[in-house]
Amino acid sequence: MNHIEASVAPPRTDFIDRLRVVLTVLVIVHHTAITYGASGGWFYREVADGGAPSSLLLTLLTAVNQAFFMGMFFLIAGYFTPASWRKKGTARYIGERLLRLGVPLLVFGFVLGPLSVALAGVPAGKPVLERWTEMIARGSFVIGPLWFALALLLFALAWVAWSKARGARAAAPVVSDDGVPSWRAWLLGALGVGAAALLIRQAVPVGESVLGLQLGYFASYVFLFAVGCRAAAGRWLERVTAEQAKGWGVVSLLTVPWLFVAAALAGALEGKPVNFSGGLSLPAIVYAFWEPLVAWGVIAGLLYVFRTHFNRASEQWSRWSNSAYGAFIVHAPVLVGLSVLAAGWHGPALLKFAVIGAASTVVSFWMAGWLRRAPGATRIL
Image (cartoon, rainbow, N blue to C red; front, side, top):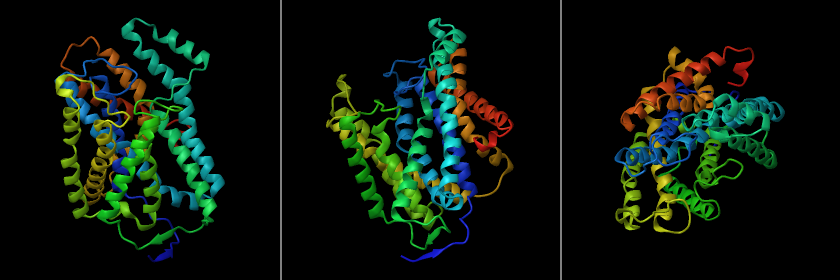
């Protein structure tokens, strides 16, 4: 492996900025799907019948989504971490991470999170303003989707500590000419992540949180953030080949049905309960390895398609990209509020999912753009 010292960090590419927008939209879609019948936890769930055909379809959507979308966020975040740290130095880098991640975490936890809870109680006849102000007065902290900010902050601090321990220099970034890892490395990574997830879930099953973090999913999050940091030197995210994308896409497609096979073998068709969350049952084992095998194909495909077809500047996409983080932060009360407003509309669950999901996306991005106009807001949002 050859290394050279680069005088400047490689520029951020347009296709990765576009991917951030798409992933943010998928977060809103994911939580909308849970609202209308998919399995999972969220502030407000209008459809509780998980056995309905629409619910099964939405659960498949969220299962595939869960396999890759947050992990891809961590991959992209890791990709720009080494250059950012080297450019800014340790003190400034940590200070900016605390500002950009810590402030939204606190604002959501003490203000927007309680608002989301208060809005979710409207169908049960609970007054919004009274409950919201009561929670704020009590100092209630609701982490919600901002667990991502907490996790990313911890990962960033761990990166700095690890780099300092290695004696890495906060100077010009190191660039390597080594290629994207081989199929064997991808496969070993998937098997390792699956084994680690299965082990973690013996202590902390999926659905259980520690300090607001669902550690059952963190094997892939830690791995992909670390891969992102390592990938920066060789600019791997910009070099995924058509062969890798197509090959791993096939792996993902062939892997998806095995979740249903495992459930059927465990007795789901006879009405028996199936546990994917933890333990050593067949469904739990299959699910742990299913996730990375699905994720690698989707991630590779998105990287390749967006680089080859959407790697160009666009004023509109630039505005959306600038607003993506803010939309992520505010989408919870927006989605819950719109869902509650539409509770009296007795339409099909899939139609409501589409309409409310689209409306929540538009409103969240609009609000984020509006918030960015506040003095100093662009340093955070």
